[in-house]
Image 1 (cartoon, rainbow, N blue to C red):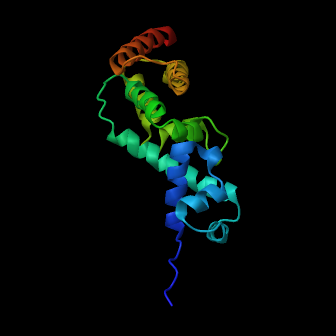
Image 2: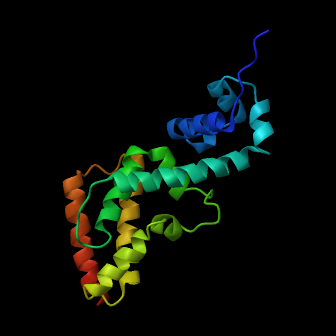
Image 3: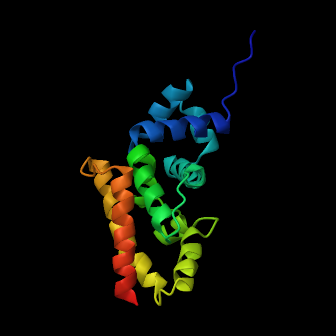
Length: 185
C-alpha cells in the first residue's frame, strides 16, 4: 500500500501566507487552508493550537517579507525618510493584504509600528541620525510629521483614492520634508 504524503509545517505556513496575500488574513480559515494544502484540518491543528497561533506565524513571515521588499527597492534619495516613504507607499499599493496585516491590524505580536518600520536595519533611527547631522534639531518630531503624510498616502492607496505617480509622490515627499524640516528647527 502506498504511503500517504506528509503535510509539513512549511507546506501549511507557505499556503497560509499565499492565502493571506490573495484574500487577506481574515480569510485564512482552517477549512480554506486545508483545501489549499489538499488535506484535512487535522494536520493544521496538530501543528498549531489554534488559528491565532498560525496568524502569529504568518505575521512573522510578513515582517520578513516587508524587510525583503524594502531591501529590493532601488530608491536612492539622499533626504532622510524619503526612501522609507516611497517603499511604504509602494508596498501598500502592491501588497494590500500584507500591508493591512502588518500596519492596520492588531496582530503585531506586541510590536509598535515604529519597531516594525525600524526593523533589523534601523531604518528610521539611521534616517533620524542623518537628519540630525543635516541640522534638524528635532528629527523625531520631523519623522512624526512626515510619517502622518506617508501613512495617509499609503492608506489612501488601499481604497484607490491615491492615484499619484511615483514621480509625483517623490516630489510631494521631498516638499513635505523640506517644509517640515524648516518648521521643527
